[in-house]
Every structure is written in C-alpha cells, then in structure tokens.
Image (cartoon, one colour):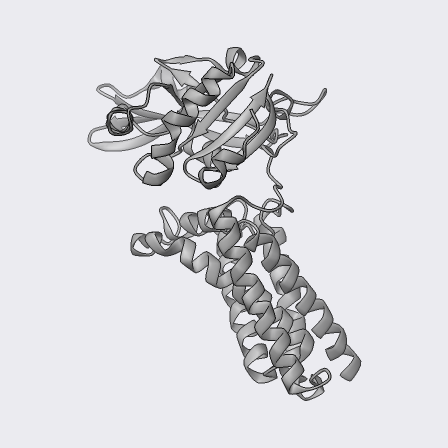
Length: 365
C-alpha cells in the first residue's frame, strides 16, 4: 500500500501540474469551453457566463497548486480532499459530455492534446482510482524535507501560476498549440490528405404540419402532407470522417467569399475582432493608426469579425476606422487569436507574426 500510494502521489501530482500548466498557458481558450458547458444546450446557466474567465483561471491555478502541494506533502488532508472533489466534478462533466454528446472536446489538455469525450471520461476514471488510493492511504504521504520547505514551495507555485496567468492574459499564450500558430499555412491546414474519408451527412427537412414540426428525409419530400410549411433544414452527421485542422474558414464581404484571393496576398494583415461588443476599447483605438502604418509599408489590411453590420458601423465611426471588415465565423476567430482585438501578419497564407493589442509596437513590418 505504501509503494502504491507513492506511485499514485507522483502520477497524480505530475499529471495535475502538466494539465494545469497547459490550460494556464491559454486560460481564455479554457474559458470558451466553460462557455459551452454553461450555455445552451448543456446546463443553460447564463448567469455564470460573465464569470467563465475568472472561473477558468481559478480552476487551472488550483490544479497546478494542488499538484505541487501533493508532491511536496503540504497540508495533506486538505490537498487530498480538494483533489477528490475536483476529480469528481471533472468526471461528472466529462461523463455528461460523452453520454449526451454535447461538448466534443472537454479541453482537459487545451489544444495540446485533443481527447474525445469518452477518452476524457476514461482519463478521469483512472485519475479517480489513484486519488482514492491517496485518500485511503493518507498516512503514507509524508512531507518532503520540512513543513516550512513544503509551504515555501507551495506558495512559490501559487505566485508563479498567478504571474503566468496575468502574463498570458495581457499578451498571448507562451506556447501556441493551435492550427493558426506562427509558421502554419492556412491553405495547407484546410487540405484533405489523399484518400481521406470525408464526413457523411443526411439532410433532414423540418416542416410544420398542422401546427406541429416534423422531420422528413430527402426521400420523403415527394410524399409531404398537404399544407406542410417548410421551417428549416438540418444536416445530421451519419459517419464522421477526417476533419482538417482548419475548417469553416471564410472571408466574406457582401455575400462573396474572398479566401483564395486574400490568402494569396504577399503582404497581408488581419485585425481580428471576433465580437466588437466585447472588444477592448483601448485596443480598438489603436487599430486605425496601426492600419495606416502597415498600409505605408505595403500591407493590405482587413478586419475580421463575426459582428453584424450595425455593430461594425458603430465601431468604425467611433474609432474613425477606414479599413474594410470581412465576416468570419466567431469560433474560427476565437481559435485564430485569444486577444480581442489582435493582429495577424501573413505572407501568402502563412502566418508570420501574431500580437496582442498590448504588443502592437513589437510587430516588425
């Protein structure tokens, strides 16, 4: 039992630290996952949505600190109880995601390692098993060196975690694991390998029949009941095939998609503002001056946003913006960059530089 507890201590402590640090490197990305859980159609708790970033920071810092405290043996009872409650919470979330198929990726390891819902649930069951060993074998968890040393290391872990969280929120993730990282080519990210199986969908048509919405397959359309009124069309996934790292990437203006044209530009710059209502006012105020600077260096500059025309016109007028706005899916834009607004510099579709609006002057044009 003693040796099993020692192994469990190392395994759980190291895994919690690694998992926490990966998410702490990108707390905004983890907060988007919490948005999914608290929004529809999962738990439908909109009152928590304004606090997802704060909750994300709290959870990931707690993961790191508990991992450190377990390894050094500081406040063993508090640490083991906290780990048990935390893993029970995570296990519930991953089971709910897997069973009801609502959140496709729990974000346990951020963008560094993608797990399916059932893989995430299995991982949490394994962790629960080892944490239960720690729970029933607490007497074998001894403090390394001294209580004072354990306290100092734990406090340093907390301070370092808080500093890392503050840094990445005011700049960008230290390590970028996303498909839009510097050096990645967007066109290649959208390609399907030769022989790759594509997803198969079935078109489902919803019609209102005598006040009730009913679903029909395309083969049933020839025999629709009299007086049926079309409501919507839904695509039902039958077989999931290969999904390229970059998908749903469009650059639309006035109903036309300009992806091919824009990604072939030699000197291109995106000003990413996924939601103008949530954009930082200080960051927005810097965009026009930077646009003029980039334009003088020969760059074509456009803004990418998922906001509607009314919001765009309002922001353009308030900040005297003269660059064009193109529509892109909000989820895609949140994947491209974590600050709102932010800057992406490209050369023929290859990302050369990225910057938080706080680091706009560090970009080399």
